[in-house]
Length: 280
Image 1 (cartoon, one colour):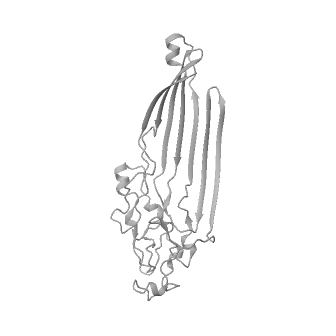
Image 2 (tube, helix red, strand yellow; image 1 turned 30 degrees about the horizontal axis):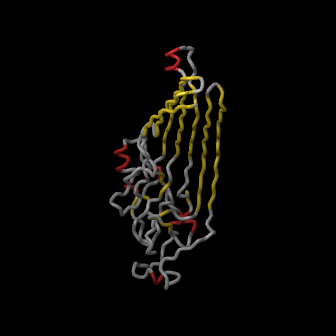
Image 3 (cartoon, rainbow, N blue to C red; image 1 turned 60 degrees about the horizontal axis):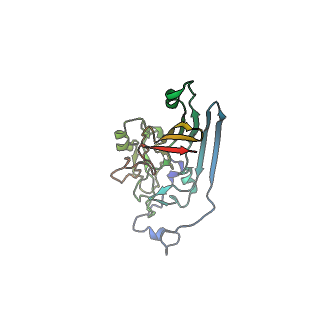
């Protein structure tokens, strides 16, 4: 979606050569500031469903819908820039940490006992399942030009969007992983910002890959004596071996523009571990 504030042009005599002469304080280069004047808003709806332990079953499920907007700049190369230093509204949009949909659930289920004795009782009774599930949408990101066509000297210009609606740039996230990492969004719908502008694509207009993860533990409690219980534990982390990808490269001048090169921080393949515990 084109940003309505993007039509602001820098002066006609702007060039890379006279960037310093056009600064408000010509004796200084880029200046950082700590400012409490930025605006942000957060709205959320939270739903919870809880079942206390009865008949061997307990669980808690939580769903949150939220939106978090601010006029604080998006991150560019791990730093923050006010793209248009004279218009905070140009940077109004979803905050970098805006995660609209989050669903979490966890619980325990003591599998019903069979009326058995002897070996059958020892093998088939005493099982318990404890799953944990997380599903959430991905964080937002902006498409950066990678050029200093605004002649401001900080290379924080955004790209121009040449489509009619931003949904055209969102490719199917259900494609095979090989296709996802080669082109996560439609790169053909963006071009470098026009000379003298800051780019017309909005702040954080696209979203990265979401997260889906299931961990669970399978427990078996076997009474071996009046005061002793042997517990077998099988624990599975990322049980379905889902891949959590990092954000794609979103700078047009990069040769890997639109590609995903790494998995998310903390993401890991399926991990299984087994243990025996003696309870007394």
